View 1 (cartoon, rainbow, N blue to C red):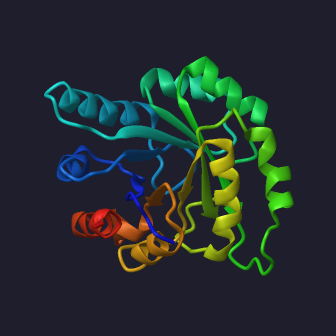
View 2 (cartoon, rainbow, N blue to C red):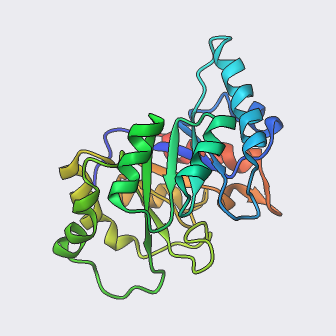
Length: 232
């Protein structure tokens, strides 16, 4: 499949101002902060500190990425408290959040909403267009992007493992028809992201552990990942 424009890049699981400073020169569209249970989990106050840094850089005329908060089955109260301290641009939902909940979040907090869809790593059968429509049609008009991620039994996503990419086209058909973005996560790293981009041309790619060394964000790996995605 020919790719006319490069996918956007989202780097997830950021935890420090130092890393943000080191990657602001790169064409990264979204920075993800994890507020769900995870080894990369941030407090709302820490997230607010990182967002304040980005806003200060934007005030200097520097292009900064949009900020994305990752949640799993949050209550509206939890979102209220988190966004009061960390004014995010996007809320990314990784649990069993209903279309009605997604719409309330979008309208009440005036943010974009990304909804994850977990794909089993061992899934043998290709989902049909009818099955995907049944799953996603209720979300049309309630979300701004669908994020495909590898299912993780503990955290829902963020497993660092790939799923069967041959199921991407049927989801891509739905997102194009619905007018929302399709993002792909799950086990991406500098060595395989160009293969994904060349074969499927998603609207965006999302990486976390694939640009880390010993659990810490690696600037060289982030740079290589971004270059592999945006080289066209």
